[in-house]
Image (cartoon, rainbow, N blue to C red; front, side, top):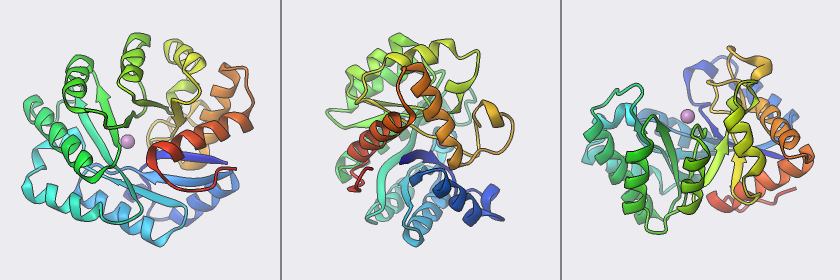
Length: 258
Ligand code: NI
């Protein structure tokens, strides 16, 4: 079995065929999917979908792009949503200095506020990081204090990966690990300790190589796992099992892993 640890099935991209997408995931051995959120409406929708469907879990949070919308009321709403038993993380939260859609100082304060919320709620965090490695590491060093989480859709080099692991974080691999030119990323996936990583799609974005440029969906997470199995000279069933166990451990899904 596989777990897609980071999808966005609450997006309107799936409004016309969401059930078919879930059925295809099931047929591809994807037992569970965590829908990650990026603002208040997507958090509300992710929780609603998780409530309606056995396969789905949710994270709630405000993405750095929308950091300027994270006021006290939004924080209170996230806290209320997180009372739902199928909310398993706060995220995706972090820094994005590539698109800079919210001022950087506001991104940093929204990130720290949501790290603190996660600690208060005893939930792990799902971290988005783009072109912000130095500020990311210094914020994590000062604020994690034992809180656990995952660097989602990992995109750094070996040194950044090592520093994330030192902080106790997991690393999650998405479609880019299947791209022929992703040499650095593939080397990290080949060598990372087996209890520290798992897989995701980040759908509808970042389809693996065989569907590159098209809409992504959770069934394609198998292509990510298959590539990592190849890189590690391991088998797909074994990589599926260990990544599911790792996700089950971080997110406390309390599900039986087969
Ligand atoms: Ni995402």
